[in-house]
Image 1: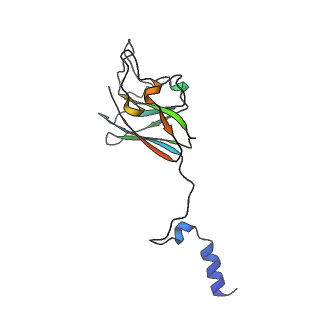
Image 2: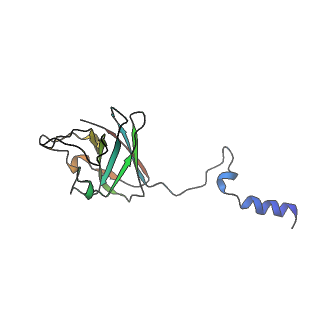
Image 3: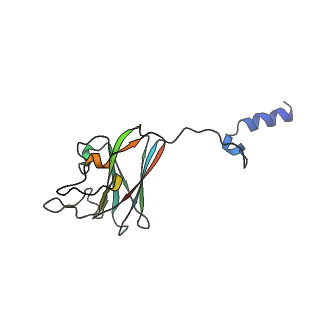
Length: 154
């Protein structure tokens, strides 16, 4: 095998990212299907942040067992990011809690008022006598990468 053919064979076997030079057009990659939740308003980095995604009203915002998925992350510098990968287009709502004592649930008073910081998509406020409702928190996800910003309340 001649040297020029051998070099051509070796170069063609390299991944496109290795071959790309500054100014080259990037190789098309499969689009990311992710809903990213950027959480702010934390007073401390203690505990964990729990983000739950719901595709229906039932159980929203606090019945985590009825959520489609929950993600638990640690905060850093009083901020956190929860990422839900691989989601199909649809309508969803997000609930977030700062589980300071790491109990796995949002601590509430005997009348149901949260004792730990919480938040929801669209930063919807609590109802007069209860938590925010799904319809106030829902958002449309068309695919790709969508970033939501949720500020915790107490």
